[in-house]
Image (cartoon, rainbow, N blue to C red; front, side):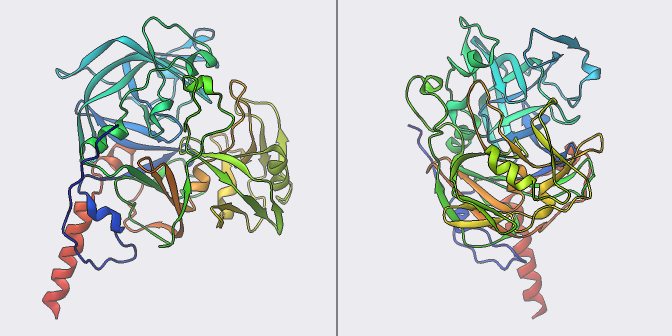
Length: 446
């Protein structure tokens, strides 16, 4: 197993404006707090990660494990399975402009390749090692992928993904294995030390956290909140966290984890759901997924909530992301929506039940599931995460949630371009310096 190195800081008592630094943060100075940019009308998140001293806008995704970026000669296809659809020129595809250029420190991996199947598309590429920097955390030699073919959806800004899932979700394959189908890519995978565990080896506490902010309705891009590593995000929240164990996802076959049932996704049990005075009391497993903005729910639950819109949402079984429920943009969402987790009900703000896409059409964020490779999964996505501070503890295999006191970050920057917004990430050291300066200033006035 991995050895977790810890260094200890002296306890410092600080006066802060609203939020307090969590007591667990005092045990390590290896941490990072990165601002997020919300793109695609609030449905996609990116943050800046450095690979080989090059900066990339990457989607921090709890639903996958691999770190990858685009390489200069990448190709894209329209259609769900790469190799069976039409090649599209790069300039007609909506990824960001950044691509990875090999550095003098780059080392190729010759005996393996990258082949990932996501719910919305596939990514293929090569593998190698280079330095990776996440805020102030530096990984001198990290395995990552360079995508040369993809057909996944893009948001005009992202240039790859940083997977924050368990190592078992890694989708690299031995060089003598060939697959293009969804089932083939989900099977016969190689597990390696992903970036999360590499940061732990540098001394980081083994957890990360999200606190997502809302962009104004219909705004394409804006500040999206924070993702933090080894510390909590700088937002106001209830001090009372509820803890839940990460569960083995029952619907994922053991064949996807080399024959033994293992924890794969960040899965928990939703005990009940309420809306408009109605209670859905049938519990179900759900994946907490930062790469998915929907509440993907059992069909009868989705139907019940969507029928409570005024006027009611309309079921649309066809389309690239179907099945969905469309709504009028000025529709009134159901009230008192809540999801019970660990015996506590977490309320969902009514503004998180409707989103507007690039065409101006509006949809409900509550949708029924679509089986993927024969596997049925339910999700709590970004519109859920806007209402909580969510801690993902991969050292203890548990998740912790606290309600947001408000949805405004303590130090919320003005929306700017993704690269600029993420170029100077906040760190715990900066918060300590800031608080100390405030204390010195107050003392000088006394």
